[in-house]
Image (cartoon, rainbow, N blue to C red):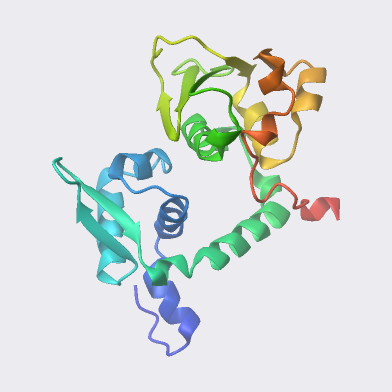
Amino acid sequence: MEYGQFCPIAKATEIIGEKWTVLIIRELLMGGSRFNELQRGLSLISPTILSKRLDSLAGHGLVVKKKIPGQKGYEYFPTESCKELLPVIRSLGDWGMRWARSSLTEKDYDVELLMLYLKRSIVPEKLIGKETVIRFHFTDIDEYPDWWLVAKDEDLDLCVNDPGRDVDIYFTSSVKTMADIWMGDNTYRKAISDGSLKIVGDKALTRDITAWMTISLFSDLPSASEI
């Protein structure tokens, strides 16, 4: 896609303006590196398009593609030029929180993206003991309603099959309720009070959940309709 203009905005858009590219950059900047992890964060993207976009980003010097040692497949890492897009991505998110939040629909509440974000929000050093198992049960979906997050030292695993370990804390809610809390549109206290969220676990963990599972960095931004 070429605009035929010397304007730097036009030239930048030629590189990052194709569908999915900005979201791929978002996932790379949030720590995604393996193909299946990037695809999990972009559930509607086809493998062919993801591969094509990654190759394009690599060709423009925004991504380095490296073979995984001793395994099949590759990992993808953002270069300095890609990392310099972080303020742009943050500003785009700020704008979306203020001006596009009202256009959210039920189909936008993607459980895979939610769980990936919750996994990335865990602060392992704030948990208690060498291993913590967190189970989520979502009442509004039939396919994969149960998810487990296993935090062992600094390693975090996300599972859709029971890992066979004792659970330390249980969350039961709809996907929307949990997503709204993470995005800052609701709080744990309000959701528990109105019955849309149930949490069971040791008080040491349930007393202040945001201490060990942070919420979105955009959560402090009000919608434009609230201003």
